[in-house]
Length: 215
Image (cartoon, rainbow, N blue to C red):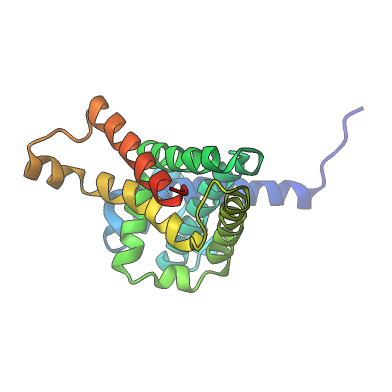
């Protein structure tokens, strides 16, 4: 005997599906055109949904962009949690985080372009989002625990700030990838060929571990 689903449950699932489709289409639009160049008409076309439905769930383009940012941060934070860094030895955990960050940025270039757009608008969408800011706290707390674990074991030196370290890890990947076109031309080197990318990852691991390890 089949169980009839309540109308409210069906409506909720339909709403969740619609929001997910809209966010995916909006993410593609914002990554291509930025916040300033993105158009709700194109997002509606990409999603296959009525433009009025987009405005029903998200009152305007700014709110939709904020939701896309929140979803982007949630996705990377969930992927970082899946690394199970707390189960690793401190140096292995730091190396794994560096490798993950590099590979995640490579595999999700839309994440970088959306962040670029957010920064062009002075980060106001993050400032107005409690969800996005709250997502970063567990990662920093975990990184702080890893650093303290390494300090107690004598593997790491003391006095390392977890926020500064994470910014350095992210920045080493972010700058290289977001500026690879100009850097490749300036230095006359294809920075995105397999050998260059492998060299970059090795360099980043050496730089970060060289900083945290006790001499």
